[in-house]
Length: 338
Image (tube, rainbow, N blue to C red):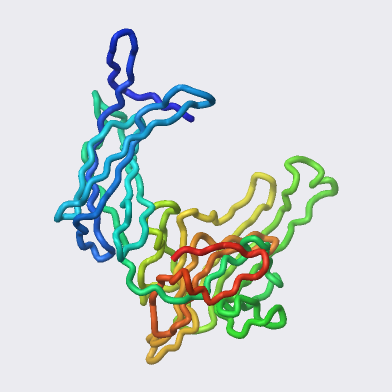
């Protein structure tokens, strides 16, 4: 384990020097999605104190404290930690709320004297209510079984309910998503690929996601993995803010010379398809979400985890995990969360 230098107190007990970690203090304010304070809910905070010497890197020791939030949804923690961060989470989540993966606060300064700074910051943490889980079509396309676009340099439609390409490439019926990959390899001199680094192919490529109807579209939201509510998305899909296309590029014109729109670990998407409009306003549509980035490469590989609510009168993004309308194919073993 990586060790970090700390300004900390050291005391002498008998003939043994004992490391005493600096003090830290933090206040957690627990709210629901509407900002209402949540009282009487257990919040756990945990910090690393020291390592007991032993095999390999020894055994890390952690101290945890659990407190109930007060009438203002607040719980304050004071403890010693050798690292410049404290982890916190709701544990256990009360009935009517989604499970919580918690978060952590990283102190910005090394400790002055015997404490970390800033001292006693207030961190707002959202615990999401279970409101209206609904059946959805949920598939991790390209997980377990590699998937490729059936054609490049032309638009190909994908039906999210059938989970297949439109003819002539598959049995889909409605082009919910329209993908287009424009890609070309760049010619190189003989023997170029015999030199290290091996496996590179010079190329230019542009990946585009489009839609079929006025009002259809997509928008990004950010939510880090392994933190916060297990319901990563908002409870309801927003009514505004959808863009009619998503464009990504990946160019490698020479070794060490290229550009690519990087995938972010914390990026997710909400989309709207099958829109029906009246007087320029969407009156019916199917909403859904993509957890994580849209994974693709210039060879046509495609990978994404999508959720589609098939009810055109509902904007719920809460998936009832017991009612997946998609039947996994052989080799697909992913079990999606809400």
